[in-house]
Image 1: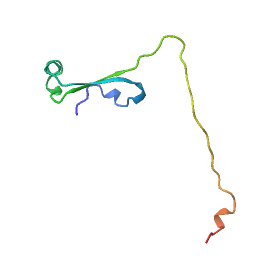
Image 2: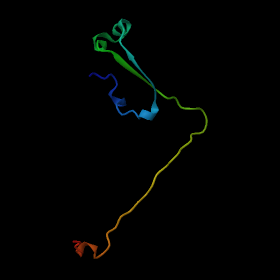
Image 3: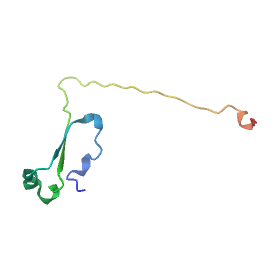
Image 4: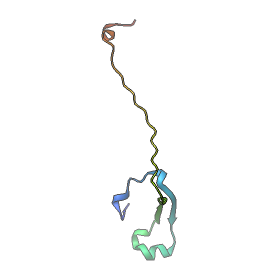
Length: 75
């Protein structure tokens, strides 16, 4: 499947505003033979004016083994 702009293959699904599948003759006249199976147009969300707002939600965990527990055989 040919891709015109290979730099945008990793699009975050949360950034997609609309997706359109164009399969009409006018699309073929614009994109040529590459549009024979249709063209997918992805429109991403636009940024908002003003100060940027950042949100972070994360967690941290750690695991350590207890000395001596590796020698115990549970039967």
